[in-house]
Image (cartoon, rainbow, N blue to C red; front, top):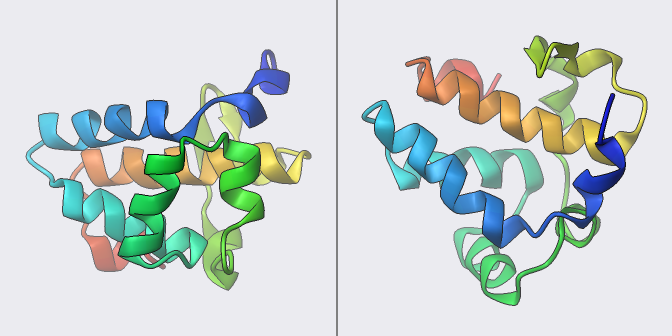
Length: 116
């Protein structure tokens, strides 16, 4: 995928407000975004807040994640025209999993269905 090499160095704290804005534009909440991020990564809400404060890049954000949810492999679909299940780089795939979760939230899908 084009520009994948930049994804690991993107600062999570800079992308996070965009996730929240996308959700809020569709009448979803920051709390729902946080729930999805915590579900995927295993971070507690306090640990997530600390990650945002420390301004880690995605590489560090996912490296320090307590536990990627075992059902994350059930996340299917396309982001930027690429199927998330076909992405070979594990880190880029995790970032795209997160993107897909936020997309599903913004499309009105119930949290219980998003968190497979």
